[in-house]
Amino acid sequence: MTRRTNSLLSVAGLAALVVVGSAFTRPGVPPVAKRVAITTPARPSDTPSPVGASQQPVNIDWRVLAGLDYTNGKATDTLRKLEGKQVRIPGFVVPLDDFQEEGAEFLLVPYYGACVHTPPPPPNQIVMVEMSGKKAVKLNLFDAVWMSGTLKIASVESPYGTVGYTLEGMKVEPYSAK
Image (cartoon, rainbow, N blue to C red):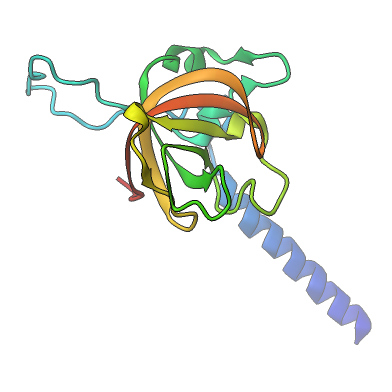
């Protein structure tokens, strides 16, 4: 009975690894490090841009930000092209002070709870956000957001460790798949 139980546990463990692994990769798609994950919001090509319209932010994800080698400061070509550009990043807010409910400065991280109760993510997975005009926004740890603003590759020390990016925040909105 023990041998059969161990075999079933081994099969169950292998199945769990396959399921977890498939959540991070798709058949026929190169590994994350080789993919470029930049998208721009759709805009009909026959509609001219209004004169004086602000730049549409480029949607990026944390795989793009992982293109910074924080040990030597080198960045991928894709990431260097985003320097000083308007971007839109999904993530979770981490207040710089415990129990802070509003603020104009905070961290943006890729997953809930990062920096708070665990070791912080690497610097290329943390963004220091300073809202334009020091405008305070609601800081809710539990809700995912889209953060829009101007991206800079810059090493900054925060209460939670070294940060690889700064973002002049323009807009915070609740996360949606759009």
